[in-house]
Length: 352
Ligand code: G3I
Image (cartoon, rainbow, N blue to C red; front, side, top):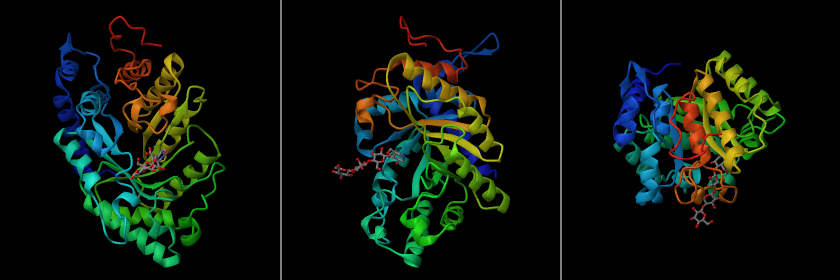
């Protein structure tokens, strides 16, 4: 489904993000001999093909000048790492706390960045009061939560992870409280409620270990095909992509493409790659190239900015090290976004 207001916003926000990214990004728009120059930031490079490049962020760190400089310099999309989850936004029944999420949305809007929403319904990070609910009480809590949260940010969110991590590795449904109490229909109910609450947001299903053709991605594929066939509102699938330097990505692009062929957008939603140096950079490059090769792959989000704040900090999985220095992986991504056209970093072997 195409939501024209959102698509207009995307064009505007891409332009605005480039405008706020300073001189380096401006350079990206300079035309020479009729040919676009390789852009010099991740966000500007992604924007050249109509994509976004985002990062998961933490509200408190937005006040840290080093953190915000890195964010502003390279990213044109953000997602809350934790601040929009159920435990953060509805700690008590019907009592909402939007402060952390509002901080992120305000920050993003002031800079023309897009905002992804993460996540409306998940088996983890549920507040205590939800964990003990049964039957219709849990259903009403879920629907009320979606209405309250997606309704609060209606019009502000580019795409919502409506449901997160509801499948097992073998393609069966995860036996969460939601599944056990509400039965197979709960995911569909959640998507319908999200569409009602925010008709302009794209609605995504989001999961991990879906990095190729495998039983888990098969199960999700079947659900999305069924939703599309029956008119259940779903617009996108998020591929978290928590990877390692040895990850087998031989069917990664084919997997993205088969979902795109169902008529949904695909997004790389939580990318990080344990490792270092060329091996890590090579995995980042492959993921970026796969997204660039699939026209319905609308963007990439890394799950944080620097290794210093990553949930996998010991594995140094991000594009910036703990001192905010750009890693080999950064230059591999930039190069892939520019289709192999970006300038190498000065005096550096950053390209792999
Ligand atoms: O907010 C409390 C704080 O008050 C307390 O002092 C502190 C003490 O440990 O804990 C804080 O909560 C932590 C929260 O992160 C915020 O820092 C939780 O314990 C901790 O469990 C939580 O971890 C998050 C995790 O999701 C929860 O499952 C990670 O930051 C976050 O990166 C991670 O993100 C998930 C995605 O949402 C879904 N996909 C997988 C991804 C990685 O696990």
